[in-house]
Image (tube, rainbow, N blue to C red):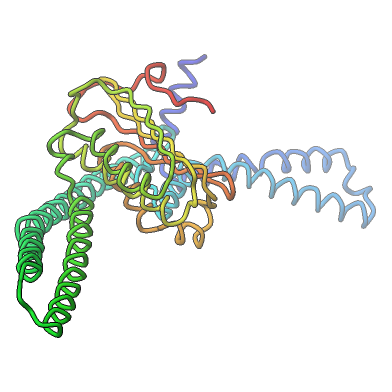
Length: 367
């Protein structure tokens, strides 16, 4: 019996859509036609009053409409699945793919071609986005190097020259009263200029670190995150707790470390601008096959589903976080609600390693 049903389904799948609709319509018409035929042969329809005949007609038409609707829903279900895939793509879900269609050969081919096109588009999008990200990182690195090698050194030299000039003026002897006042005024001006230059140099050093922290290349992701949090959060008296389960000297490929650091950097930037948090918890776990990063604060939170709220929180930055995680074949989840803080979870497959993440090996703490 099962083999018979399988063969019938295979034959049904090879039919053209127009014949399926025709057969479905005929099957839909059969029950009410049989009912009308039986009642007509027994002479019961002739005994109906006008009101009963109207009710009978409405019932027949309603039954026809319902049976036709059900049959068409079943018949066009593969088409609705394809439409659902297209709708998900329109909403920005680039992972959406058409399901496997077995009951319709034509739609199965359409679904296969659609998935092939989507796979090619996804590869092209990832390749283009990866090239853009790499170009941005190279440009950041170049600007940071030039700021360090030229601007920072020039400002350092300027500070030294100002101190030398101040020392020379302060060591002058045998000056008249008016000359002494002028020298003191000049020394005071030079001192203010030196302080301003030192402040500018410090800001440039912070900018260099934001552009491309050398500690990321030298020591790795975790030390870079700790250093960044110390310089950004602790300066604003935000309590920071790290829970890192990573073996010492266990490094990721440079692209993966850069992407995760940029996600962390964006999370901290949004936190400082909008969260009004008092404490931040950073958790990172790494196994042979996966990397998981979580940043959680106790700030004011926001509604991720509200476009205006997400825009205030840094909509373009949030999009960049999702994009960087997607480029690594992972996901970025933002969990937040007003007055309940914000939690950012990033999970990626470890680059260059085979296998999938083991949920028992990597799991978030339940607070």
